[in-house]
Each structure stands twice: as structure tokens, then as C-alpha cells.
Length: 124
Image (cartoon, rainbow, N blue to C red):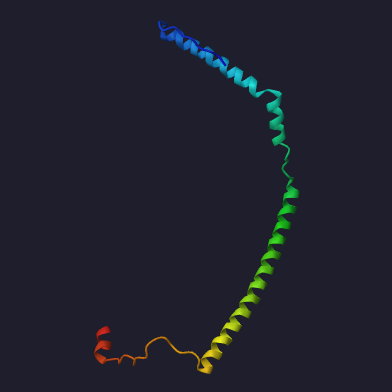
């Protein structure tokens, strides 16, 4: 790059002018280095992917919508069938346990609280 040497005894106007000239030279060097053939070749490599036309976009969107509908319909029917099978077997197992008398509550058996007329009238 450039090497800038300024004298300590220069006036501010000439120092600012020299600084502006040096900045222009640095800017021009940067512009030239970015225009080099190697840089242009790299930039072209990134621009190889073209945007599809409007018709191609619509075709792709329709295909994606069809696939999503088919997938969601397939997943929903599988979930419904699986839930029916699980809930049916769980309900049957629970009902047979209750009917056989094999289920015993872990809660203590206490008599229900008697409802007094004073507590009912105080709530009104």
C-alpha cells in the first residue's frame, strides 16, 4: 500500500489536501484490485444459479402442495388408526380390571362429609 509521511510543521490545509490525495490513491488501488480477473471469475461462479420462470415456479408450488397434502392425509389416517387401537385396548384393559375386582383404590376410605344447612346458607 502507500506510505504516508507528513512533516510536523505543516499547516492544516496542506495536510488535509495530502490526506485527500492519499485517500484517493488508496481507493483507486482497491478498485483496481477488485476488478482483477480472479475476482471476476469467483463472482461469476456464484451467479450460475438462475431463477426459475414464473411457470416453473407455479408448477413446483403445485407439486409441493400435492406432496404436502398427500403426506398430511397419510399421517392423519395413520394417527387416527393408531389412536383408536391404543384407546380401545387401554379402555378394555381398564374395564376388565374394574369388573374383575382387581382394582383397589389407594385413597383412604372415609365417610363423605355431611352437608350442613348452615354451610349451604352461608354460601348464598
